[in-house]
Length: 341
Image (cartoon, one colour):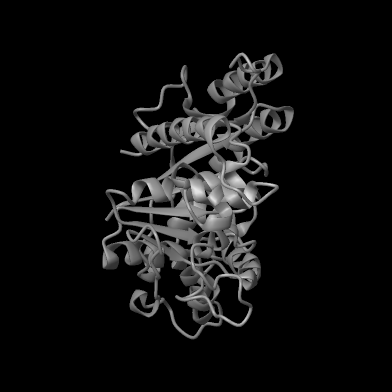
């Protein structure tokens, strides 16, 4: 089956969900892709279904199985594992090779169930052992059943049990960053946090085999980092303050994020050149894309009516720079896709 990937940073506001959706749309041009919305805020689900004409109607139920509906029988102890055939995965209205395992506000309750499993799976409690491996089991089985080339999991900016469960299931992770003090602080700790999860997973895995439960690897590789949302001067030069924070973050990636006490890097990862993409602030393009459920690089001129004060489309000197920005953005998303190959 294909790769399971997440964009993760325990610091919020780094355009993680936006980048993940756009990466999924880009990959779906030549591959079969599944988005898994593991964040109870359900933002990637909102973006996905925004392309549906009736998306804003409160009387319309979203198609497909929600992630909480799927896992509830396991949480309640009604079945040892979840049948992947019971999970319905709708496709996108525009990107037909892009599918979603949609989010659910009630999935926040999974924090308790996965948390209990995290603490008790090392004991002889078979119920908690089955809950501990349930996410990995189902996601890999969905991948095999449906022939997905990529499975992209969206998680919230936390270190809670849902996030731990998802990240340990992944084959690779990408860390999105913005050049500021808060991401500098986050990247100093993130590697050690994930290493602690991996070490704990190994302890739990040793207790699964005697109960006939097959353990999983549980050690995602770092495929790269992304610097994004930075702003430039009118002379197309990155602002000095952003460069300063980017340099500080680069040093912490090399000394703290990767290595024996951090995340294991992918073979192709170059610690001296850690940024697989650099994405500058896209301005009005982001809210427009969210409004129409499209990739940022796929906005049409007619969509700009919604961003115009007088309801007219952008033309000429207003529209042409946006076309260039979309092209630039698509090139950077292509670099992220290339790092996953």
